[in-house]
Image 1 (spheres, rainbow, N blue to C red):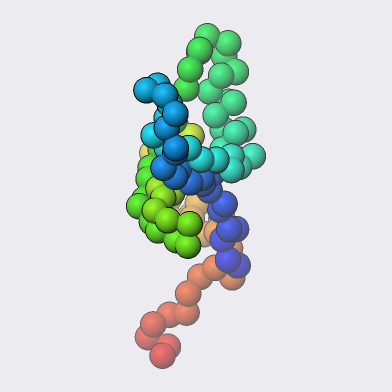
Image 2 (cartoon, rainbow, N blue to C red; image 1 turned 180 degrees about the vertical axis):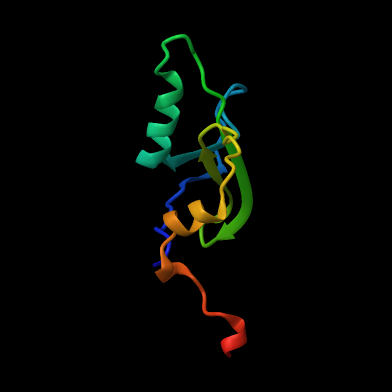
Length: 106
């Protein structure tokens, strides 16, 4: 069984025509995925937060329209607790269809 495809919240920034000193250097749009929105919203649910610090990454590209920066927004990273798994738990919770063939059978 293959893993489900994860769609990321991606956008692009392109150089803007600045008309004033305070005008932005770059403009663009971001396609926020529902999964990222729900995860970010979860951080606001306690009612005490006024902001959530998300991750953002950027890559330089160029296309027919010129140079751009592709950006990715990601929800805050939350370290998952380490869970001790026994061999018994592994086999009970795993799907045999996902197991690879024994290399010695080749």
